[in-house]
Length: 220
Ligand code: DX5
Ligand code: ZN
Image (tube, rainbow, N blue to C red; front, side, top):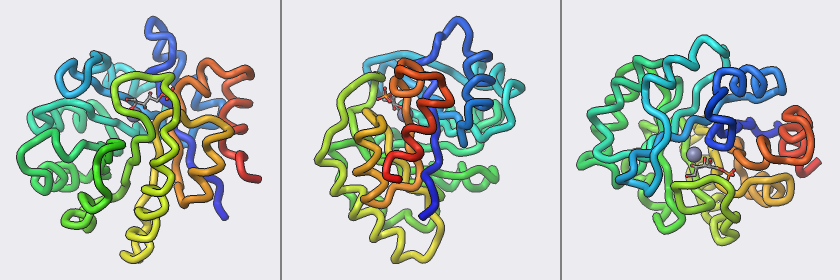
């Protein structure tokens, strides 16, 4: 099977040199750049806004995989589109009308993702699956990098793989949180096609290229 797409999360990068970090992971073989947007309200941490995303845009041509952990989410979606996001993933409980929020991403010509927290049931995808280009399974509770992978989420990946296969569409199945060369094996086996990794890329033992390759080749 195809190796998974690797989307390093710059949450674990040196925030005083994000432009360089994005260039470095691009050269090191990242397939996408995962950008964690937190508002201190939906999650207990505060990170990157659209101005920073816009400032990073000239530093790579790789897709920006933007993970919005903000509520209310709707008023800020246009700013992230304008800033250069390629994929925008939102949480189902971050606004009053999930279907409308996803439509607003799609109608701007961008890819839409839906994020499932560890406590979110898989069925949340059913009414909106036609609008989805990506489903993001959180294998930690959102808010911080460097947390431990929650094993119970592997079964959720497996169940979402079945739902995606039943659509016949090529929806990316991405996993985020505690992914390293060891936990990646279960994710890939369960049917994940993209893996986010923050600390395993930026604080791993090797170079960025070695750390990315170790996750990509985890089950080979
Ligand atoms: C957590 C973020 C993750 C985080 C992953 O809320 O969504 O993307 O950066 O970091 P690691 O890979 O260190 O768990
Ligand atoms: Zn994330």
